[in-house]
Image (tube, rainbow, N blue to C red; front, side, top):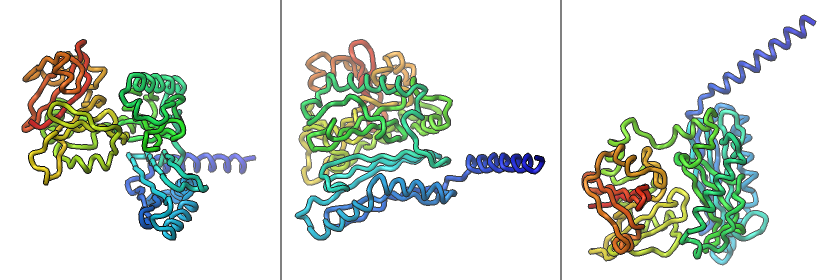
Length: 391
């Protein structure tokens, strides 16, 4: 009996020590590479985890990724593309990787000849806790997963009920919202739809990105996973100064484009959602990429020099977390509390607002070096858009 008791104690101590070692594992060398195998116009992405201190966890994650993406079949399709050249459908894959502390999130889109012989487009996502090697599911993020999903579906319905994008959608059955195919980023959570449920006219499945502040009431606040994600958001010790510094540098937090960027490059990278709109002096572009949803870029309507690339002249963000200033949430009082009284205000009646593709309201403007940072307030005094433009 004594020997059995000693053995039990040793087993428990070993388990405790192993758990502590795992909790303190150094993940600083962990990397994910997207190995791009190319044949002609076709390619296969192979996400590969390396540098993990636990080879068992690393091997298991790599095996799961390869199996879920059907990499073996995809390589057969790639080899067939080599034989057929441009005459075959081929396979095309692109992906994104987000890694912060012990959280890893990967999203891959495949288009063309999919594994299994089907043709079309599909998304595959992977979310892992690198400390444990366990998948992260949506339920791990929320105190009540069903309540959170219901709230997210209400946000989706509200966004699409009055959306001008509806005519551009091939399928738009946005409910029920997918719960298994999602990715994480520094800004929020993106859900990915099968293209048989919600698709753009390109045939690609639709996506919808939620910012963390929209989900904050439902998040599991005491979870180390959630704390890690919230800590990764753009933040500043002195928000007012950071807002001005960012504006002066031509950028907005969480927006993937900056003033002065090549507009054609942005269009190619983020893919147009609709035909461009026109203000009195510019063209306004909207995009499908999750990181650019609710963001529009402006380019000069009549560039002076057609021989030079057109640049991004203005950025409009109808949904952004500007260090606490948030469209749809913040008010005129919040704006003044954060940045002081605006240097200039411009009242927009129906005609003036229409010329600028804005609702009637007020523009509150602050100078930032060579740039102007404007906040559009609707007639009730609620912030609707943040606009950064060249003077």
